[in-house]
Length: 118
Length: 115
Image (cartoon, rainbow over all chains, first blue to last red; front, top):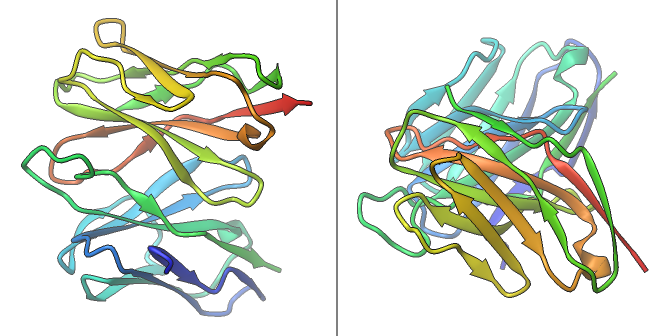
């Protein structure tokens, strides 16, 4: 029973195509995130949704559009793919809380999606 | 903006020995969490340990422990009795307790455990 799952795990596509990556979590968390890991392994936040509302939108091109149909899902759609979009994309989730808890605010990651744009 | 610095790109350790990874961060915040994540060759990001800034006691998880020095803004990870399965890239991460809760990561340290 996977906590945070992503599909697909690998995605190879041509420049100019449109593609989507799906993420689902069964932890009951209220906040989900997308991170990008580049070829040098550097990880950077892209987006965050809390209860289906966008709360973080870092300086990401408009070609990237997240969608959260419900608290358990956060999808990432990418239009007009470019060579520089090649990376590993990680989905994560957490339960954001104002009260102290053992697990509150800890982010759990999916297995990642390796996107290769040719 | 918070910056997280991991000054050791690579470290090597003999099996059963101890290795310490360094991490420093820059922030003006008082309430925050710090994390160490492990990324083995499988690429999965695995939580190793977390530290709340308001706690003076250093966090420990089995063979993993941290040395948290709040005034010095330092957060090192000690791996004791290193095992081959500890071979991975280790990332230090900072999270301020605010309305975004994003993780800011360091560049990572690759740890290789030798048999």
